[in-house]
Structure formats: C-alpha cells, structure tokens
Length: 311
Image (cartoon, rainbow, N blue to C red; front, side, top):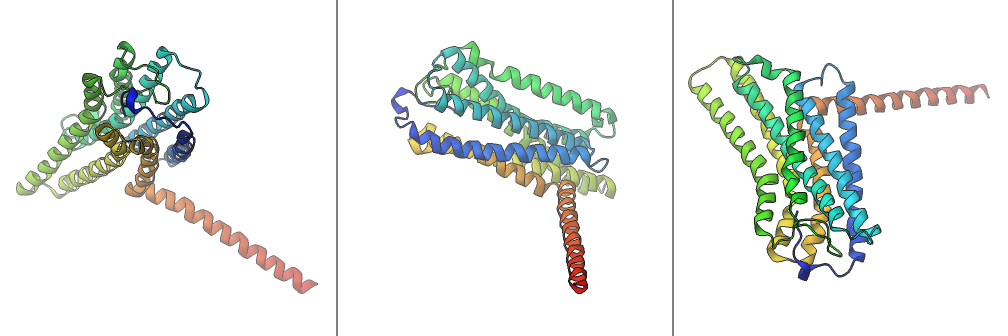
C-alpha cells in the first residue's frame, strides 16, 4: 500500500467520502465478525480449545487492529485536513504498515505451528504446547512492531494533501522494502512450509508409514492449505494498489482503499467456512436458535388456539 508522487495527487476530495465510507463499513463488518469468532472460540471449550484456534484468534485480533487503524487514517484524511504535520503522518504510516504486517505474519505463525505438528511432534513434543504458541504470538507482535520502523526512522513519508500517509513511489528502495518485508517474506515462507509438508506426505506414502501418522500429516496439510487460501484472499485486497503503482490511475488508488477491508471481510467469512470445527459450532448455534424460535412459535400458536376456543 504505497502512494505515488505529488503529480498523481487526487484532486477531488469528495471521492474519498464515498470510498472511505465503504471501506469503513467493510471494516466494521470485519471487526464484528472477528470479535464473534473470538467469542465463539472462547466459549466453545474444550472443542475449540486448541492451539490452532488460539492462533486463529491472534489473526482475528490483527484484523481488528488493522481495520481500526485504517479507519483512523481515513478520518484524518477526510475530517481532520488541518493536521498537516510530517511527524504525525509518519506515525500514521507506521501504524498502517504495522497492521498490514501483523495480519500477513499472523498467517506465517499459523503455518509455523503446522510445521511443528508435522515435523517435530514426536521428537520435540513441547513445541505443540500452548506455552510455546503463546511465545510464538509474543514474537509475532514484537516482530511486526520492529519491521515498519523505517516509516519513522526515515523522512520518506511526508504529509501530502489528498493522499494517505504511505511511502511515495519515488523512494524505490523503501518501496521495495515494504513489498519484500510486509508481503514477500511471509508469503514465500508459507509456501515453502506448504511444499515441504506436501512432499513429506508423498514420501511417507512411498515408505508405507503408519496410517495414523499419514492421516495426521494430511490433516496438517489441509489446515495449511486453508491458511494459504485465507492469506491469498487477504493479499488480493492489495491488487488494486499494485495496479495503481504500475499505472498511476486514480481509479486503482480509490479501489485499493475499499478492497483491503473488503478482503478482510471475505477472509473472515471463509475462516468460518473452511475450518471444520468452527463451522460446525457456528451452524449448531444458528440451528439451535432457529429450533428454539420455532418451538416458542408453536407454543404461542397453541396458546392462542386454546384461548380462542375458550372465547
């Protein structure tokens, strides 16, 4: 998510009202869905009390922080135009990039956990414990606080009227760092882990390992596949911004504002659909409420009929 130079500054600020309102709306939906997932996982013990769902909650927290920060950035752009300080703009850019990396690296943490289960479960069982995964989450948040420090250490981000506080395209090295650090590293790492587990399963089949061991690794591959799908849904939100960097067309810039929060909303829906256990719990909640409502309606109708007969 980088803006271009002054020559491509958007002249009509009214365009932001509709675009940012749509983005904030999708962000609000994402926040509600993320909080709902966390609450469902928290209350569905012991069925969803697993390290996999713990890391899923971590990703939901990253999504919530992302949507909140982006909404704040849009508020400064539209409702606080008099805030023209470069330092404030640098910090808004820092938190914006921090939340992006928090989301992408949260998927890398999930993939690392799958690697622990697939490769080190027998030799190092302590890697599968909740304590280890709490440390993974701690390292994740420390890392994402450090990675975007270039936004405040350098003076590349400056206030520009009508534009969000991102690194301008003219700073090629800094732009390359943002693409490499926030996107390429987590995506490449996850794909390497996915390929490794996939090849490991194929080798296990050739060596005729135990059925239970093979089933467990297939389950790890399935979970990792879902992680890859969710990550790429999230990444597709940045396609419009990448097109804007290539062609510097205003429509791609405006579309990029919406597609990021839209992608987070779609990702949360797919999180529920792809996770078997979470999907079943959500379905049971919806079904049980519908059943209770239908039962109450039946009782009400019976009472009304009885009262009518008495009359």
